[in-house]
Structure formats: structure tokens, C-alpha cells
Image (cartoon, rainbow, N blue to C red; front, side, top):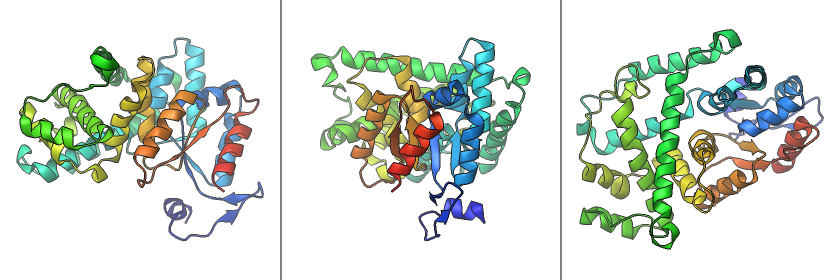
Amino acid sequence: MRTRRSRARTQGYPARQNSYGTVNSLLKLYFDSFVYNLIQKRGEAAQVRQWRKTRGHKIGASINANIMEALRITDLSERNARIETIRRVASPIHPPYDYLHYREIADEIWRLRPSWFRQLPDRRKATLFLRRQKRDWLKLRDPSQLPDLSAQLQRIQALVGRDMQRQKQHRQRPNAGADWLPEHSEPTVQACIEARTRADAFWRYVTAEESRPALDQELRQHRHLEWMTDLRWPQPLADWHRLWLCEADATRLPICRIVGLGELYQRDRQVTPGNAADRLGHAAHLSGFDYIVTTDGPFAEILEEIRAEMFGTPLARIVLIDSEAPSALAAIDGAIDTGDR
């Protein structure tokens, strides 16, 4: 019964009192890595876990964001402590959001260009892929037997590298990148760009530019997008741009919009590897969660800008807590309790 209530908090189920004496609102929460760091520093993993259980909330953790960032910690004892903190506090997000991101892309291609597929995308391949992803979380129980995520790490590093290169190239353009996109060689595509707002054109451009090299590299057996191997690839560049810049339906692509807008609003800030990690790994969880909790002020500002641009789309609220709070639990509980009134 709890699962049903958790999935339907907006469908008229009554709120319940808990042992804290406050209303149990059954929230879906996402913590970025800074929050897990604070929980770890304060030694409060057990307390946060008990708070989650008592409140009835669900905290989702991402292997491709939270765990991957933990694996980059060079000190082994620190790394293992971070992974254990994440495991104790949260449950794995399934399906993972990098899959959901490309599921959006695959479904929109199928809707608009079914001839680009050899057959209807095979759900069995996707199921097998997701089962492997789920097993990786189970392996985290034993730090000495961590799953081999090196291929995943290399893939993410490649994404970050491409993101940084594109942002730097844009900033070298006139007006510090205000003219962010050169005129398209295909007049019909250029007309679509000119007819859209800057923000709308930008997320479409980022989707087209980021997904193409990812498909080039990952669309093969035993790679990250192997579940999409029925896609006939490559497709002509002008046709690819026409699909995303002229025809794609924004209402079907919330994660694509979040990821693309994240880059747009990062353009006023210094280009760092953390920028891409934030928007590709963490920001996507604006879709499907009630709250994103962070201690990173600039990141919180970017998330609020995305929310403002996507007004009318159900997105998570942003909770910014103090990175030096004496109690991580008190900071999280107080901020969420205030925001959910």
C-alpha cells in the first residue's frame, strides 16, 4: 500500500502524521554529491536513513552521477565511505536517468522518423541493458568487489570534454558568444532557428549536437546505447538538425530540455568539468522528483533558471542548504518542511 501511496501523492491520497509530529508528504528527493559529502562529514547516514523511513520519503541515487563522482575520490577510505553513505541513505534510481534521456530521443525519432529504424525499437534489449545496470548497484555492497565502471567513466569524461570544447568555442565568438550559433547551411533549418526563442533553439541545438557523437561512439554491441542498435546510423546531418530544430515536440522531451537549458544558463559562468557533470548528471532529476537538494549556490541558481523557462512543466523544487551546517539532517528536514507547506 505504501508503494501505491508514494506513486500517487497528487492523486488524492490523505497525508499521514508520523513520529516527528508533522505531515508525511511522501516526497521523492534527489541529493547531489555535495549533500552526501555533508552527511558523511557529520556522520549522519544512519539518522538520515531513519528520517527517510519515518517520513515515508524516497531518496534516489544515481550511479552515473552520485556513484561516478564518488569513484573519482582518490583516497580509497574516503571513496568507500562516500559510497557506503550513499548506499545507506538512498535507493538506486531505476531506470537511470541517462537511459531515460536517450529513451526520450529514441521515442521522438520513432514518432517522427520511423523509417530510420530497421524495426520497432526492441524492448527486450532495453530490459537486458537495465538489468545489468541494476546489478551494478548490488555490487556496491562490497567495496573490494566494486563493479567495473571504467567504460562508463570514460563515456562520461568524453561527454564532459565535448561539452567544455563546445562552450569554449561559443565564447570565442563575437559578443562573448551572444551569437551562439553560426548560420545553418540549410535555409529551412535556419528559418526554424530564427523563428524560435533563444532558449528554445538552444536546447534543441544541444540535443542535436550532443546526441550525434554519442550515437557514433555508443551505438554498438556491449556499449551504452546498444539497446538502440535497430537505429539506422548515421543519418544525414541536415536531416538530423531538421528533426531537432524544426519538428521535435518539446512537451515530449523534458530531460532533453533540462540538459540543454542547463548549458545555456551555465554560459555566464566559468567553464569547468563540473558544469557538464551538473547538467548531465544532476540537473536531469528536475523531472520526476519533488525536490533537488544541494549546497551549491550557483548550481541552485541555474536550476531555478531552468524551472522559470519551463514554467508549466512539473519540475522539482530546489532546496539550498548550508555546506557547513552543524547537522545535515536538520538542514535537510528544515528546508524541505518549509518548502512543502
